[in-house]
Image (tube, rainbow, N blue to C red):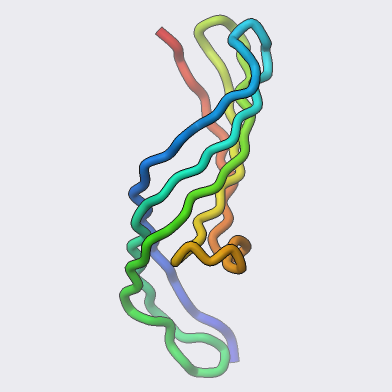
Length: 107
């Protein structure tokens, strides 16, 4: 049997972002810490035939590390690794791990 599940997550959070270098540096590492609400809907079934909870809403802790790199003074790229700790449980850090890449325009 195969696992056939789909999870749709929405996380609303308030975050503190702490940078470590000033804007004179091209690369600026940072850490992010926050608290929020995880809203998850799930469909499908696991390989053993059981189903995940259809709706799961939980307080969540947000932890992230990233780096902003300025290409010019007004344009940069950013990479970030984020985990959402459902229920504040540190043991779930691998379950909700995301990597994002983006661009920024500064005015």
